[in-house]
Image (tube, rainbow, N blue to C red; front, side, top):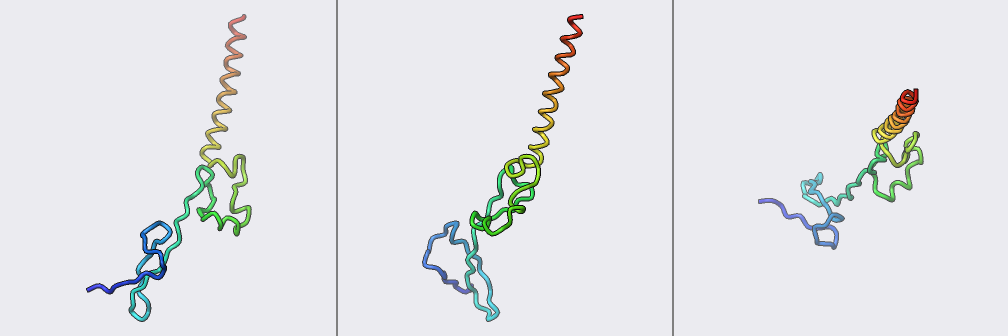
Length: 106
Protein backbone atom coordinates (compact mmCIF):
# COMPACT_ATOMS: atom_id res chain seq x y z
CA UNK A 1 0.00 0.00 0.00
CA UNK A 2 1.23 3.51 -0.88
CA UNK A 3 2.41 5.85 1.83
CA UNK A 4 0.15 8.81 2.60
CA UNK A 5 1.50 12.29 1.98
CA UNK A 6 0.24 15.29 3.95
CA UNK A 7 0.07 18.84 2.64
CA UNK A 8 2.71 21.25 3.93
CA UNK A 9 0.72 24.46 3.37
CA UNK A 10 -2.69 25.36 4.76
CA UNK A 11 -4.30 25.80 1.35
CA UNK A 12 -6.04 22.47 0.49
CA UNK A 13 -7.26 23.26 -3.04
CA UNK A 14 -5.60 22.01 -6.22
CA UNK A 15 -4.99 25.39 -7.85
CA UNK A 16 -2.19 26.60 -10.16
CA UNK A 17 -0.48 28.36 -7.26
CA UNK A 18 -0.42 25.19 -5.12
CA UNK A 19 1.18 22.73 -7.55
CA UNK A 20 3.24 20.07 -5.84
CA UNK A 21 5.41 17.03 -6.56
CA UNK A 22 5.95 13.94 -4.41
CA UNK A 23 9.65 13.54 -3.50
CA UNK A 24 11.31 10.78 -1.54
CA UNK A 25 13.69 12.05 1.19
CA UNK A 26 16.98 10.34 2.06
CA UNK A 27 15.18 8.86 5.08
CA UNK A 28 12.76 7.06 2.73
CA UNK A 29 9.79 9.26 3.61
CA UNK A 30 7.52 10.75 0.93
CA UNK A 31 6.92 14.52 1.15
CA UNK A 32 5.41 17.20 -1.05
CA UNK A 33 7.62 19.80 -2.76
CA UNK A 34 5.65 22.88 -3.74
CA UNK A 35 6.44 24.06 -7.26
CA UNK A 36 6.53 27.59 -8.64
CA UNK A 37 4.20 28.73 -11.40
CA UNK A 38 5.32 28.16 -14.98
CA UNK A 39 6.35 31.37 -16.72
CA UNK A 40 4.99 32.18 -20.19
CA UNK A 41 7.32 33.55 -22.81
CA UNK A 42 6.82 37.06 -24.25
CA UNK A 43 4.72 36.90 -27.40
CA UNK A 44 6.41 38.00 -30.61
CA UNK A 45 9.18 39.64 -28.64
CA UNK A 46 10.50 36.24 -27.73
CA UNK A 47 13.75 36.01 -29.68
CA UNK A 48 16.31 35.33 -26.99
CA UNK A 49 14.20 36.86 -24.21
CA UNK A 50 13.82 34.40 -21.31
CA UNK A 51 10.47 33.22 -19.99
CA UNK A 52 10.34 34.45 -16.38
CA UNK A 53 7.78 35.41 -13.79
CA UNK A 54 7.14 39.19 -13.76
CA UNK A 55 9.14 39.92 -10.60
CA UNK A 56 12.21 38.07 -11.89
CA UNK A 57 12.55 40.44 -14.86
CA UNK A 58 13.63 43.11 -12.35
CA UNK A 59 16.66 41.06 -11.34
CA UNK A 60 18.10 40.41 -14.82
CA UNK A 61 20.05 43.01 -16.80
CA UNK A 62 18.55 45.13 -19.60
CA UNK A 63 20.58 43.36 -22.26
CA UNK A 64 18.86 40.08 -21.33
CA UNK A 65 15.40 41.64 -21.56
CA UNK A 66 15.70 43.10 -25.07
CA UNK A 67 17.16 42.25 -28.46
CA UNK A 68 19.52 44.73 -30.17
CA UNK A 69 17.85 45.34 -33.54
CA UNK A 70 14.90 47.23 -35.02
CA UNK A 71 11.70 46.36 -33.13
CA UNK A 72 13.95 44.49 -30.66
CA UNK A 73 11.69 44.34 -27.64
CA UNK A 74 8.33 43.91 -29.34
CA UNK A 75 8.71 41.87 -32.56
CA UNK A 76 10.40 38.55 -33.28
CA UNK A 77 13.00 38.21 -36.05
CA UNK A 78 10.59 36.62 -38.52
CA UNK A 79 8.11 39.49 -38.14
CA UNK A 80 10.87 42.09 -38.62
CA UNK A 81 12.07 40.26 -41.74
CA UNK A 82 8.50 40.19 -43.08
CA UNK A 83 8.03 43.92 -42.42
CA UNK A 84 11.28 44.81 -44.21
CA UNK A 85 10.38 42.58 -47.17
CA UNK A 86 6.85 44.00 -47.41
CA UNK A 87 8.14 47.60 -47.32
CA UNK A 88 10.70 46.79 -50.02
CA UNK A 89 8.10 45.16 -52.28
CA UNK A 90 5.68 48.08 -51.84
CA UNK A 91 8.42 50.52 -52.89
CA UNK A 92 9.34 48.32 -55.88
CA UNK A 93 5.67 48.20 -56.94
CA UNK A 94 5.50 52.02 -56.83
CA UNK A 95 8.61 52.29 -59.04
CA UNK A 96 7.25 49.73 -61.53
CA UNK A 97 3.93 51.59 -61.67
CA UNK A 98 5.78 54.87 -62.35
CA UNK A 99 7.87 53.28 -65.15
CA UNK A 100 4.80 51.76 -66.83
CA UNK A 101 2.99 55.11 -66.66
CA UNK A 102 5.94 56.92 -68.25
CA UNK A 103 6.14 54.31 -71.06
CA UNK A 104 2.44 54.66 -71.83
CA UNK A 105 2.85 58.45 -72.21
CA UNK A 106 5.45 57.96 -74.97
